[in-house]
Length: 358
Ligand code: NCD
Image 1 (spheres, rainbow, N blue to C red):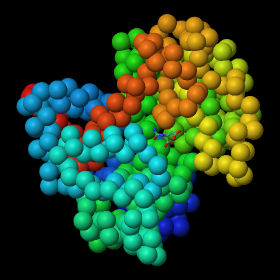
Image 2: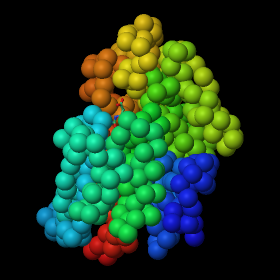
Image 3: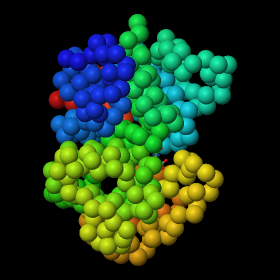
Image 4: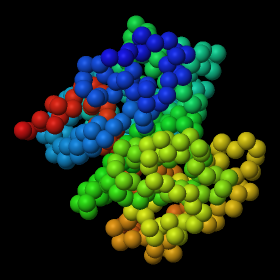
């Protein structure tokens, strides 16, 4: 079993993404993550186990008996939510997930209120959190920081797991988990997720949710991926390299209406202008053909769904919100259940929850 204590940081950082997976796993449990940093850690078996566990937790949480049982699992653990980048849903759904499982939480939402402001290094801050907490859920604008912190902690005398809640433009693995969970649930009674067409639209260049979800979809046979965006914001080559290496069918398109009419799921994203190099750069891009409105809704197949990681600006018209195919609100709530499942699994409670009441 590969261990983060047996590889130095430089060598680990350079590994191909899939090769990092064994280093991030829990050595004591079969195919179970310890640190969750990358979409590349999840295969189909693990995704389906997580979805089953999330279904079980959401069912149990409905009854007082089930909810009390869930709350009794982790009252001896504390989680730190360290979010140095804006967040509503990812922060709140992780918080709610912790509450469902009885974990207590602390949070830093602005580095200016922590000792980093006094010149403390990020490494020292994270080491400080590990003195008081048993898990760190972190979102940062820097790519790779969660990985580096995971390596540091695993090589410290108080190793604790890290969950990456969004790292730069790069990865957002727990968002991709809730997206897959939503897709699995949406198509469960309609023949399943394999052989579907998923269209991504919006800022595909800088949206980390797209990069992570595109990878997770490669775990399911026969899924075609279509990328619709203004040419300045089209999907980057590293995403396509993965699809080519795995023999996944994909298409680059500039025609949203045509793509919608052929899609089972349309995944809209906002323009990520916080990453602009110069002021107003994104505003100069013509995005009017990349919005989902009444006309697109008419073209979407009857069993198709519309997804969005949120927050939304104007890329989905509000007139779509009450259509039964608009899945974004349910998708958001799914995040709470799948994150509960991931946290429960990370602490080794998968079997116990699945056996509850059996
Ligand atoms: C996304 C993110 O932070 O990458 N939001 C989220 O976590 N639901 C998408 C976005 O900000 O556009």
